[in-house]
Image (cartoon, rainbow, N blue to C red):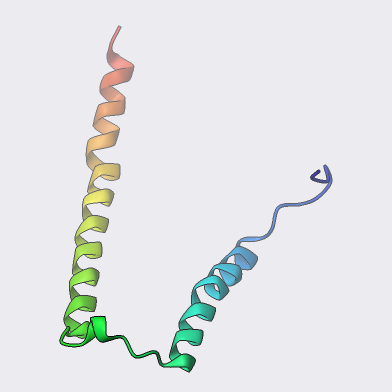
Amino acid sequence: MAQPNKKPPCAVCKLVRTYFLVAVPILFMLYMKPEMSLLKGIALTDVFATVIGVMFVITILWKAYQEFWKPKRDAAKKNRP
């Protein structure tokens, strides 16, 4: 059962935990140097660049939704009887 007086963890602590959650498996994979025949013939630089590009477009679309479309929709809902 949770303690009622316990404060929630700070933002920095959450960030450090997230980094560890991501970094430890990556470091383990780098240390083990697994041979993956599945990845032979695939240009990982191109895959990484494509992922970054897609995430960039998704971020721009999400921010455009939050900044332009959503406020107009919320304002229209308020003005309806």
